[in-house]
Length: 364
Image 1 (spheres, one colour):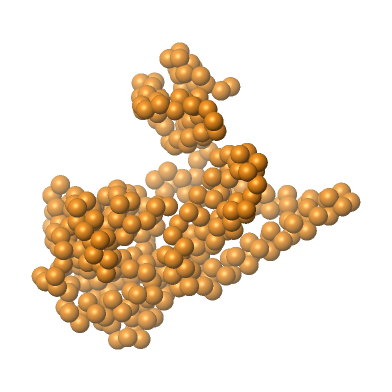
Image 2 (cartoon, rainbow, N blue to C red; image 1 turned 135 degrees about the vertical axis):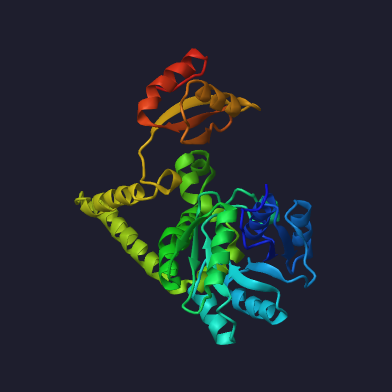
């Protein structure tokens, strides 16, 4: 693909070739931009380069934009070092907290006219360049937090980066950003880790009975602990406030359950918590960032064989039904599982009938 017509960015330096940095580099390479790579880990740079993410950076030439894909606590010093070298015209970062790097950059005396803090809200449970994908940011929110000092040209360069990577640009104040991600990202990760930690010493019987529910709740807990320690330490107070609220709800629920076990007391507090959970889930933006939608689920038994999932998707396509989402539930000890196919409610019955006609076993 050729660069966007009239684009101001022709070359980019990516410092930090982990999942996010390498994914940005791959996305930009698809746009035919010249991308340079740097990292303290020579092996990570080498792997990213072999994946086609760019070329080694040796300190020259000066690039249009430098992207700092390093942990939050290292952003400011990295920014200062690069600015002293004159590495780029403009700078941004992708750390998941924003107030800390900005405060540290100001304290160090960085040039804030050329710097716009950023944060793409995308990721995977796996880390490192091997997990990188050029399409990681497609349709995903990408926060950018320009200060009053930021030059309009710097803001425009970061907006262009977001567009080139396919992200959805969201302008937000740094403090507001950190409070928001504490609610939607950082505290949920700690909460998931707390649930997953219970599984570390759980009896084999419990693990043998585990299903999709526990996988859904604990999926994000598989993230790199060292990476998350850097994130949480950079956003400690907002995360603590959310966790204290969650802990209060859980404490009240536990108290109610103990009362119920003892004398059959009412479960109003737990019922209220569950109802609020349903309302909160319903507020999560739906497809393409639009309003949340309630989909119908068509459950189909699927063999654990190569090509089975592709056959199912093809069969749905032949019926003219668009699959909104799909999840797999494996059957322990058996060579099959269940595919939960999420579709528009009006499409559920026609899809079920069409799949049965094609020989698929569809649950009632």
